[in-house]
Length: 171
Image 1 (cartoon, one colour):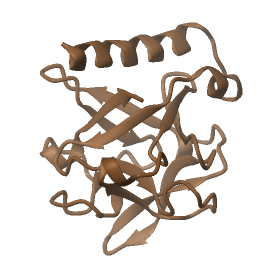
Image 2 (cartoon, helix red, strand yellow; image 1 turned 120 degrees about the vertical axis):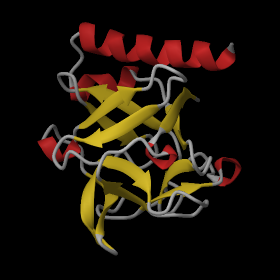
Image 3 (cartoon, helix red, strand yellow; image 1 turned 90 degrees about the vertical axis):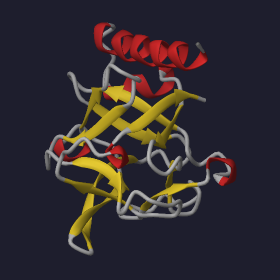
């Protein structure tokens, strides 16, 4: 029941932002922080440095949710049907980075509404899990192998494998 309620609140919050006409700039103060957990690894999406490094271009990892020091909190800011995903500690938004062993790693940068910062959310009806898709590359966010904590988060072609699905829950 708690899981259903959490997902309902997420959808309600995202719809409120969409229908309420919030802009990327004004949504940050009103947005509820969320944890983003990978369904294959159980890891929480975390920037390098546990949220203490606000440098552009740093790596994102899936990490033990109990050991994130609060650096794994994110807000979703509506930008016309897509979302900016902002880390509450660094203030930076997710975007595609550079090459990482044949794939593209996910990084952070100074938030703006350019296409590279926009992400789509596709919900799976059976359990409320989400695929998080880069609007610029049309690839999904996923841990590199999808088998362990500590993996770098990358982009790859969309498929329905477990590692491509994420749970988004309010903090």
